[in-house]
Image 1 (tube, helix red, strand yellow):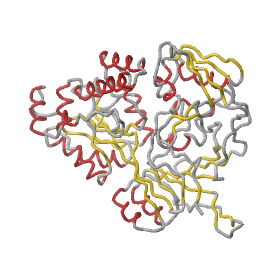
Image 2 (image 1 turned 45 degrees about the vertical axis):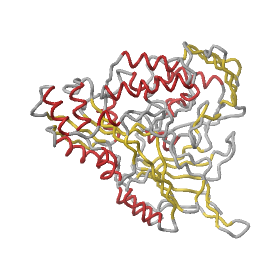
Image 3 (image 1 turned 90 degrees about the vertical axis):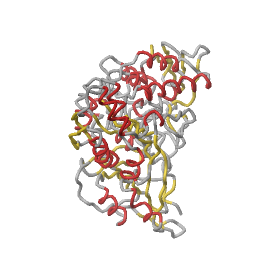
Amino acid sequence: MHHFKRLAASTAIVLCASGALAQDSITVAIQLEPPNLDPTSGAAQAIDSVLYANVFEGLTRFDADGAIIRGLAQSWDISEDGLTYTFNLAAGVTFHDGTTMDAEDVKFSLDRARAEDSTNAQKALFADIADVTVIDPLKLQVTLSKPNGMFLFNMAWGDAVIVAPESIDTIATNPIGTGPFAFANWVQGDRLELARNDSYWGAAPALETATFRFISDPTAAFAAMMAEDVDVFVGFPAPENLPQFAADPRFQVLNGNTEGETILAMNNQREPFDNPLVRRAVTHAIDRQAIIDGAMFGQGTPIGTHFAPHNPDYVDLLANSQFDPELSRSLLAEAGLADGFTTTLKLPPPSYARRGGEIIASQLRAVGIETEIANLEWAQWIEEVFTNKDFGLSIVSHTEPMDINIYANPGYYFQYDNADFRAVLDELNATTDPAGRSALLAQAQTIISEDYVNAYLFQLGVATVARAEITGLWVNQPTAAVDLTGVSWGN
């Protein structure tokens, strides 16, 4: 995403009593740099990649397997009608600036996220909160307007972390959380540094310092890893190099899955994508496997709707949008576009978008759809595509977990407006019975597949290349995070 100066990692090495080398510092590379450091208002996944569980904590959190576990809330009680959640908070928690974290801060965070003028990128997570009441410094009550079986799950998102009024004004450049690591330094375009929080309320992490480096170029990523300038690369951007790392005893390769539905997004309110025939024509023009093989070197699972294939509630709807250029051309003719049309294809920096975009452009060209490709930096993509909805087509991976609810928001960047879909989602939120939820999720997946809202490409895999001695890294990404809380250098 940014050019960078190659800097050798400064790794602190100390001698253990046993005489073995122990390292208390780590350098982690990721492809994208966060545009800002406020997970409660920024939409970019890179913010969570660096800060989730490391610097910021929520009431609940995701563990490495995607389970919802305790965060700042140590326990909770749910009323029989499912409307009232009483949270008991951990005692003795302070923010990195020394101020106390208590129920007032939780109320501030939740009220801020759900406020009318909130800029939270996932405001829907808080939509069912009717009231937040402080009972005492370590206890608060959250009352919902209607039961929501996803509420504890929603509170685990990076968008729901707890922040403080004292430090909120400068959070975008100086994030103050309660986590095991404190923000230390950000050299924009190059690196971000964290330092262990010695007054952390929970279990102390093994690492003393951690440096995140931002290396978007696949060739530079390979060079940095081979030179051991970086210790870990999460989301390694050059899958063609993975066999070489796997064969090198210095390294380990972790192949995991993500919650990232990679889609060719279509602007449903902009001509000609406001016509479902045209959207369907686009989907039949695309050969998913060619994109997975050509852009991802086979790392990815085809999807036919906006849902993770590893989720037990996934419905295989690939047949709705199989590769069929002849059908695509006839649908365009039926829509009055026999000669095709021209539109924009705006691509953010990740390899899946830049590499996939070239392949998709040529597949669309084969049925008469010309695309004007614009390669955007991440901040530009957020502004032009996500915020201003100024695009025809775009490619992006939606890495938030279980996020089919975005299709219930007509103001979301692809601007899908379907009252029937919203009704299904409302019913889902009010349903706690697992079989009932599965049936509604199947219905939701089917509606958006048959409406051809977007072209669903593949579930993003995630490959992590790391020094062989490092333990405790997440293999899968149940949320976009590089959780360093359990990471250490092995014996």
